Length: 356
Image (cartoon, rainbow, N blue to C red):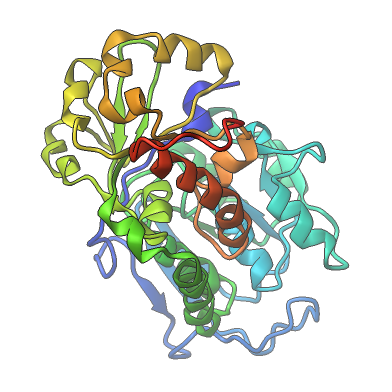
């Protein structure tokens, strides 16, 4: 497994909405993305042409997309929720279940009469030939790390939507709006966003707000990274009611551009001394053992107290890092008992279940 690809940190800027670098601009023929077209009709009579400007170029989408390919994370889920099952998706084997697919994608497509999307290699080894064979008429990559060179190649195949400013940099709301606009379903985006917000509201525990947390990661011994508040996995926890440890605001000097995180290094582990709970994940069991064996790491108060949420299920690690219509309900029911357990440990209570 590619360790870096396993977590793909990315910097989501809170003020990204409305920036000139990422304009969802409809063409002169209309004032809003048509949402009444039938994606299976082949007619696209209600589709209004749209242009989406992004960091790597401009996607001009003239007709209703019918053969959609998605790169990176999160876009396939929103497309499926809008009734547009992609013909191809970037594979994510690390988070897949026994079916070979991310479980929430497999479950959602199985509930329809659509065929499961073809999967292809992404990242630095992007399989352009496989994408070409799928004959896409739209390529969605608003939350991805595609390069300018890759984009130029993909744009020759079909209109391609990349990220607003930096790789792996977009808020979950913007991603939904972007995908919906590209599919001619812009009027459906607010409803999807509202549904997700309601999912969070229903699950939120007000009493959890008194507990601060930091979401950390490692890239091997001696390293210690902290995700910023708007990174999607942090936003997921924040939406459930916990409070981001404000110490993160002191980490800008350690920011790794395009990662939505700061690599503070293990030597600065004491910056996390006021975090009541630590959220994290590990590449594998060997990685976990070598990281937890480090004295400075073990001395982080929350780690020492066992107030740690660290899923071992790779699907849950992946799902909890992505906010979209399919992941949120799938993750929340699995996350809540783990958070309750970590809070109990933070309070010094005896564990009722040490399975995680």
